[in-house]
Each structure stands twice: as C-alpha cells, then as structure tokens.
Image (cartoon, rainbow, N blue to C red; front, side):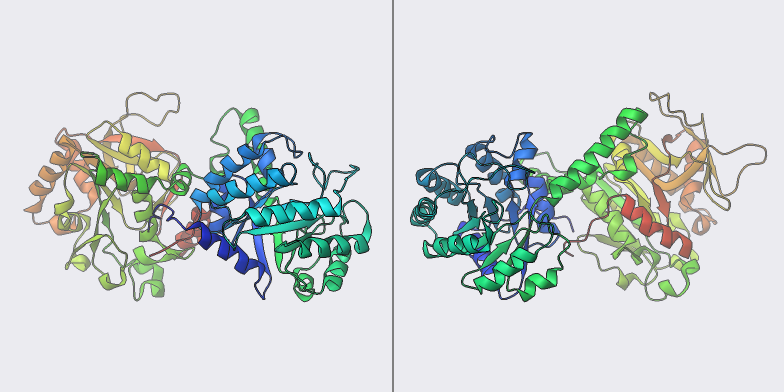
Length: 555
C-alpha cells in the first residue's frame, strides 16, 4: 500500500516515548539523522528514536562541529525532522549554546517544535568535537554546569521533556573518579540521565564507569570509537541507551563521493543508475502520493485519469508446485508478490484505477483497492479474451501490462509522457535464446536520436528468416485518446472471429499495423524481466534489490 502523509504525534506523546526509552528495563538504541529524509529512514529501519547529532547537523550544513552553525539553524532543521517522523528526537545540544539563559531559551524552542529532549555537555562554549585528535577539551566548573541543568529543568513545560547531562571527564583525561563526581552532581541537579563519553578504542573505561555508577539513573553511551565492544557487555553493565551517533552521515558521504567520482570519470549516468536509489523511491519517501490524493480531493480537475489493466489470469505451469495454490502473479519476490510490486509501480506514477484480470486461483489475489475482472475461460483462451474482460477500464488513458512483469519505474514514467496515441515498450538489447515477442521496427535503437519515436512493423513469436529483430516487446503498452479508440475497434473486429480465443496481444498489435494505426516504440535497454521459470524467479530477487527494493509498510 502507498504510505500516507506522516500523521501528527503530540509533543507530550513524543516526550513520553523518549522517557520510556530512557527508563526501559532493556537496552534501547537511537540512530543519528541530520535532516528530514534521513530521519524518515531511521524510523523506517525500526528505530524507536532519533539522535540529532551536532556533528552530522554541522556537516550537512558544510561547517565544522564547533558551534559554527547557530542554534536557530539547528532548530529550523529539527522542525523538518519532527514533521517527517512519529518517533522522538533527542538533540545533541552541545553546551546549550551559551550559559544558563541560552539553555532556557533553547529548551522552550525545542518544546515548541516537539523535540523530545536535549543532551548538554560539560564543556565551555564554543565547544569543539570530542573526538578531534590531539585537541584539548576544557571542562566547565561543576557548579556552573549544575546551574545550567537546573535552569533547563525549570524552563520546560512538559514534565516528560528530558535533559541529559553529558560527562566529558574521560574525554578530557580526568579519569573515572572525576567522571563519577561530576555525574553524581549533575544527577542531583535534576538531569534525567547521564551520557558518559569516551574516545578510547575499547569500552573498558565505559564499563568500569557503568559498574561504579550502579544504575543511579539511566546511563547513555555513544560507542563511536569503541565499536568493537560486544553489545551484550553493555546490557550486562546495565547501560540503558546506545546511540549510533554519525553512521548515516558517514554512509551518505561514502556513497556520494563514489557516485560523484564515477560521473566525473565516465561522463554518463548509465554506469551508476543501478547503484543509486530510483527516483520513484525518493518520491515515495517524500510522500508525493499523499499530495496527489489531496489534489484530487481539494483541486477540481486534478484527479488522475490514467487507468491500468494487468493480465494476471494464468497459472505459470513452468513454475511447478510454486503455483499449485496461487497464480504466478502472486509469487513473492523478496517477500512481496509480483503483482503487488507492479501495483506499487503504477501507484508511484499516480495511476489510481487498476483493473486485474483474474483466472487461475483468483481467490489468492487478496490485494486491496483493485478492480477484479474474472476470465472464466482463462484455461482455454488467450490474452485478448482476458483484455476484453477488463473493458470497463478502457477510458481516457490506458496502460496494459502482463501480470508477471517487473520493471524500473522510469520506464512507466517515460511511457506516460509519450505524446503518441499508442506506444509499446521494446527492449533493444539482444534477446536471449528461446525468447518470444521479437519486435521489428521502422529503425533500430540509436542513442544519438532522441527526437521522433520509431514505429512498429511486426511482433513475432520467433525471429524472421534472414532478418535480425530490433528487440523484444516486454508486455507493456499505453493507449490514449484516438489510440484507445484504435484498440477498442481492433478488439471488436477480432472478437467475432473463430480464432479469437487463441489470440494474444501481439496479434492485436500486428492488426493495428496492418490497418495503418501504427504503434510507436519506446526503446529501453534492460531494466525489466518477466517471471516464467524458476530461474526467472531467482533473478527477480536480485533485480528487485538493484531497483531499490523497499519493505512493504502495510497491506
């Protein structure tokens, strides 16, 4: 199902969610995010809360992590992150951006924007990142920092808003005893939890601190440098919350540097297209479909007018026992049925009305918000009989697709942008041995020609003698305006003939060519497959992964 816009969660509810994480009897985890998109990804991954890292927020602005980004710029970004998600956000608030008075204002502004809590560290403003090599870390006097904690707690409106005191004594090299002394003072001043930080590559001093702390209040750690320490040791030590503090930022930088280098070296995007998220996934993360639904509700004349018909009546006998109780269109690929993937692809391009022609094991197709058109003669008829069953969908703008088809979303997007009344999609890569639906066109694919589209000459089940095909029809076409009239008329002309029950869509395409109503051709090069055999099904898993596979969020 297409996700709806992120529903609102009240500020106090998010405060309580964070407090429950801090007080949980089991070890909990937060993951870093630095903007609205990364915050969505944290939530979708299943994390219960978000760490708004000062390092990551500074880096996404392109500045250093030493208070070069102002607190107002940080809070503005937090507002986008809050709006994009339903889980609580804990801000890495540095030193509170000044003295006690600055912290009081920061707390008020964070609560106004539904941020659930803030961590402040006992260093001097402006601070520098704790993990900078060889950098001297100066700590604030204990009494001064305790006053800051009290000021923040007195300023909050929600009793569940959390202020966490970050102890930097180990970072500064002052030892366990000083870290414990400071932590106890901060706890007495009202801190809701203690974050104990370390720059060592082993977690020994963190575990030693945790044993000595003995659960006096919740304990938070950030194992960035001591990532090799087994998580189970943190559980045994009574630590309550682990923060993965900068990993999404670092992953993004690594990926962006790679793609930027590839584009610069190769001067084409063709080499990297399979290594990056499809545009459709970005649109889905932005919840573009919610806007489309809102337009159809609130703006007259803005509703989508493209319909789709999916031919999914066959069993798929070559898939053996896998289709014993379901049609092949319902075979799962990485846990999601082929048909559901196809429907998702259509919905991402705002194709709202989708008709599915059913036949074999029709009851196994249990997807919502579809129109079903049964073909009772599916076992003794061809594709044209199935297509005719869905005639109520033949309105305005129509896409027809085989039900065992997977393809990258840009193919459908370009098909919907075609100005021609009737367009079919042809893959111009050399067909494999044993393929069908060979396409012969007015000219071969040529990447240097992006103007007029070629036209179809013929679709054949086997290659023509002495002439190489120019590709394969993949089982996807679009008809709109007069093109839809052509489709209706050609179907009607064939319907009364004795051989109608044996005819398939390529027969219809060839009839259109003969009558002078010639389909145009949209060439592609790969990025699709149909599932007819067990080998195809194995390939489909890898294909879906490369195409930016996403987990289904609901049914």
